[in-house]
Amino acid sequence: MKTIINTLLVLCLSTIVTTTFAQKKKAVQKTIFTEFPGNIEISKNTLRNTLVAKPGQTVNVPFNDKFNFSGKVVSNEMKYSDLQSMIIRSDKYPNTLFQLSRITDKKDGKVSYVGRIINNEALEVYEIKNYMADNYSLQRIDLDRILQDCSY
Image (cartoon, rainbow, N blue to C red; front, side):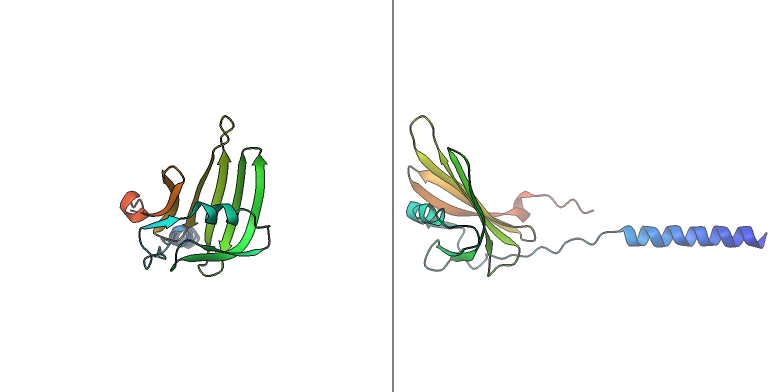
């Protein structure tokens, strides 16, 4: 009888311990770009010049006087005749990537740029927006205002 009770006790304890270790800790999210404004104008030339960098090369992308994104080019490839994409890993901000793409319209040859600066541990993202003709800006998106907390 004692053997059955001891076996059940060990089984219950192992179930409790397994359940306790299976709980995941919530990732701590942080703000990275709070010292920069929510909207930063970008020169089309800055975007064009950035896309000439080769993989492995260290680049500095001057968005404005106070915000320079520097890092190593992870990839830069021409996916199709009308799409070129590159990724830069930041030296200053750990786990932060700048993705930039140039899209050429096949009908009229017009070039446009899209991209974003992302960090999977951050509460904000910057996205490149085209707001008038050839004028571009980086707009900060505060994820904690958009995404709902689903950890409960």
